[in-house]
Image (cartoon, rainbow, N blue to C red):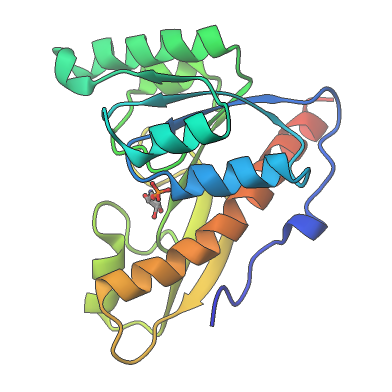
Length: 212
Ligand code: GRF
């Protein structure tokens, strides 16, 4: 069984105002990036994908960006002395993409409060658990070790504390007998791929409604 509960794109709100520009941050395979790009290409998510910043040369996310003709920049954290100077470089790239929102799609770096402040809180993240349960690394393994029957994924606004911040949307995913971390993570990712495009529309629509 896939996601037991998740907002669907069919029910996600119309985003009021001009089509928003959204930039992406990714470090890994980029399956969430692909799901978001597919939703945009299919006309289900009415945003423009302005660009990708990836901190890992050779990451799958870069291939996904190329496939969907999303401009990308590689900025390796290894080339910076500290988190502040790395975040400043990423911020500069995001500014060049002229994006209103930033979507972390498997961004494996902690960000500084200054980074979040500069982006005025318009940063989304996806985490493979039902937050506030199982924050931090290895959330899938944490759920298996805890022996829970249901876990899932959460899209939330990013705040300085790791895996905190207002929750935008969640999807519940059952843990089945015999699941190992790989099988469970694959099931959670199928839910993520449905949840994230819908959650992006929800977050942007909500922010625009409240700023009217
Ligand atoms: C996802 O499972 C997400 O929950 C976590 O990192 C993973 C990224 O996967 N934050 P992908 O690169 O989108 O395939």
